[in-house]
Image (cartoon, helix red, strand yellow):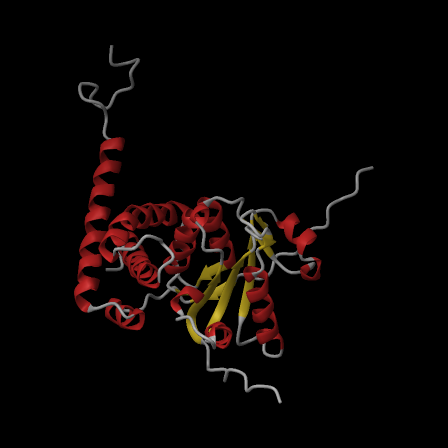
Length: 210
Length: 74
């Protein structure tokens, strides 16, 4: 008999599940995603917030279902050169979970795919042909530009100059946050939470809201 | 004639309210203590102030030129 799956909760209207790799080279884009999402008044959520354990997969599905939107970055779907050499499957796997979870109720969840170059998706994941892909060119400014393309604010759209200023401020704060948390990596839950709070603060100050 | 690359249609943008969650509510949701939230507030305000200063210096005319261009300042 199949185990009972996670119970779908009502999605949080402003929550965005971010699906990306946790590696050192990705840090500038990681900061750009957090900054971009927070600048639009949304709250990013990531799997690294979840504790480990046996039910991790269930918790990831629950987290995806609890978010109204999800952004999936497939730009690092490549061969991991550390032995044994294997392709990196986590990002496409979590995208697959999301597509399936939202398949029967697309109004509950909207997903977007981000890539360095959209042609890579056509080659690596042909099943997604016809889906929208936001190409960011592997640069933070590209991530911010494509988030601004994906999202529209009802009254006040943050422009690129503001988004870049918010990004610079959050990037400046990162070393202090790491030091304060005694963290060795940006991909620790406490660091992520501080970055989200700092990004919203930077966004509200930049837009003259606070 | 070269084969044309298939293009992917753009999806309709997602319309969001753009309203920010109150700081205290966000801190509580993230599990950040009020003390840490205040520290982060102060740090971001200071970074913003310094960034403003840096940009103001960059925009200010060089000393002695009184806002004129290099050629006309001779």
